[in-house]
Image 1 (cartoon, rainbow, N blue to C red):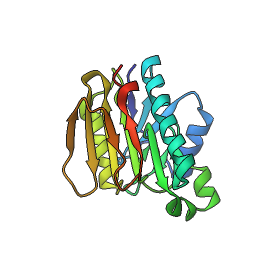
Image 2 (spheres, helix red, strand yellow; image 1 turned 90 degrees about the vertical axis):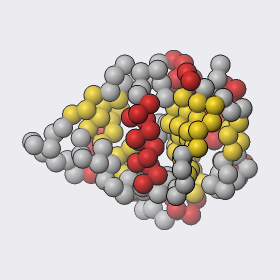
Image 3 (cartoon, helix red, strand yellow; image 1 turned 30 degrees about the vertical axis):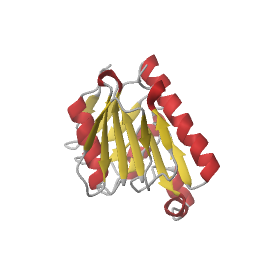
Length: 192
């Protein structure tokens, strides 16, 4: 399982609408677009990673249904970041008042904002360095809190806006802090 990057810039520079249509016309593929406009074709996850993603996303959905503080998104959701990149975090969350400011069309397509929270789960074929670069990009684009979880190494990197990265080895839980008030992720389902 490998990601491929295609640079079409010498032939065409896709507009946001064209990139959106490319994604819609190829529903069996998952695309991201980096800040240089290069298209990244991402392979599907394996069973273990997919299961972990689902378990984690379920915890966020349950918490969000109880608090009604915002909106939770899965790994299929693309966001148009302020730097121009289109990214799809494994799990993301946007505060209700920010989501409600978007037009219906912006909500239907790739929302033109950075989420308040993102989570990336490193699968066995992914590079730690590339995943860290993605997390740094999220923070540069004003994501307030991000978790990079590396199940194979039992490692979590916590990214916070305006702060140094915190690295935790085998934590039992993660706190949503002031971004996700009252949310605690139990990592037992991740470390199996």
